[in-house]
Length: 360
Image (cartoon, rainbow, N blue to C red; front, top):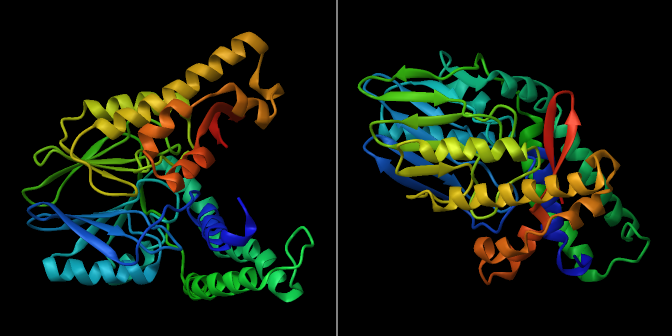
């Protein structure tokens, strides 16, 4: 990627890598609300710099349940104001589908608005949230420091003098990011208050909500929220449209988890990012992508020995996913480039008993 025409993207990508463990797609300013059923709504947040996870609002006769509270507290407060236009019933439950904080930094805003709120997460998700969440702002600021230094010195990291356009691009990007950093600096992190490790149901009042753990995939504690009557599944970053996020994933287990997901009697799927889906085609495509990566990597292991002796370049070379690029990106060059940046290698690294993906 050439520095001259990509500073804005690099800054945005960096910020999300710190805050959400994912990189941004192109997105327009604003938010989009989609009614999925009577009393069930999806809110798609679309700011350019910080791609925020989708929020789903489920309203029962007595109570309200929210799935994922988004990234910025200010956006969460906007969502709360919207919910109060829909109903005067309290938000009694919030489910965090996983630990990436573009899905849960809004927790505090909901807790402030609804003090009796119960915040639910898988037991592994809470562990990760408690380790990852409180230090987010520090990592954010630390990572921005090199860009601030570029402005101070007038030089890029390689010592080259910045052009006028590059300097302007960095200034503009930091000017957009800094107010959001300041907002996070003032935020009090709020973790989950109730954990689970087995499926359970909540009755919101003539509306059953099932909270499920189908297995590891995008993270070690991915939760799925399922409405059996309405045939709606809210799946977090197990599924992202158009290009999957793979940075904390468990590729071989992800394949199995997605296989279980498509077995649900659901007709509507809310991904962690992107528009609502009304069939299982994209889920199956993501499953096939990971299966191909895992199969190719396992074949490489049989031929050459354990992956711990492989460099990242060797891991990339061992897995060819170019047949999937067109299926995910079509003729969009930006999406094609994004696919190449995010593609899984299929390689697993060992962390205790956990086997996580290494992305490109």
